[in-house]
Amino acid sequence: MNSLAPYWPSLAGGALIGLSATLLLLLLGRVAGISGIAGNLLRRPDEDWGWRAAFVLGLIGGPLLFLLLFGHPPALEIASSLPMLVIAGLLVGFGTRLGAGCTSGHGVCGLARLSPRSMAAVAVFMFTAIVTVFIRNHLV
Image 1 (cartoon, rainbow, N blue to C red):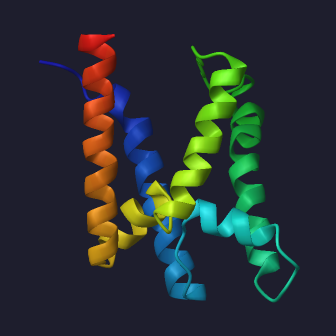
Image 2 (cartoon, one colour):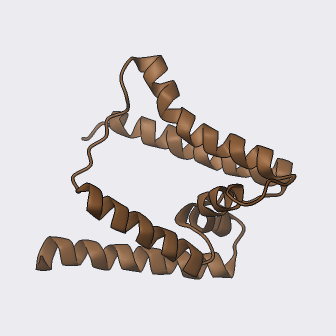
Image 3 (cartoon, rainbow, N blue to C red):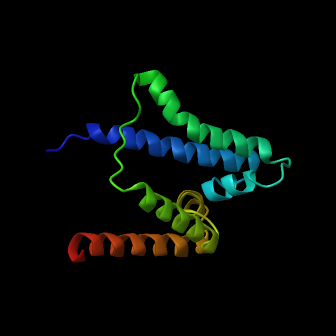
């Protein structure tokens, strides 16, 4: 029988993401979609600027906190080249604008609110991911 021990960090991370998304919705009435939070942070400062900045700083601060607590950065392996990462980032940015949100906004928050638009978006995300993995593993 396999041990569940390697899954505890993932479970804890997922629980923290769910908790933070819930608190943001309950306390501020806002959806925790990263593309919307970051994209609107770059616009002219308004009454939402402070919490958006704190949210993005929290995203950046997470790995730094990990380094402080454990003495080494989180394990990270990137097998792609820098140009490929730039292209992928641009495509993700384009997709988040086209889809009116990102995977975190639709997948974590939209599904929890039973949003039909988010259900459709997540179905498209998952279908695209499955096809991409199939093509990469079996045809390329």
